[in-house]
Length: 120
Image: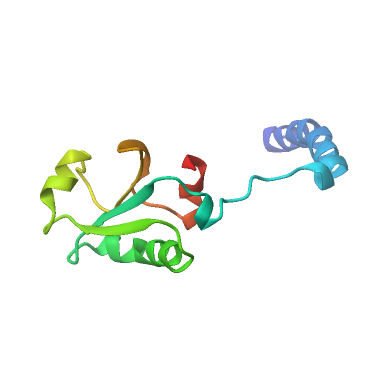
């Protein structure tokens, strides 16, 4: 038998039991839900600059959080270099979650707004 066929059969044999278990228990699996805006302690700083193309692509994530009422503040690194330096911002865009004055987590390019939620 050709190697690709053997590999495909081996992979299917391995994955089939996992798929069966997943289907059997799918109704019992609860994915964590993002917190409501009033449940969030601390704030998120969105470090960006108007000339930054990647920052413009991350803008919708910032706007969605802001519009939903989450505590987020946009920081222009050109206008506030002290704050950027305080949090060690070396590249933008950067979302930095701060609680009690200490950094809890950060991401530089969220694929979606939900990528920020594990910090909360």
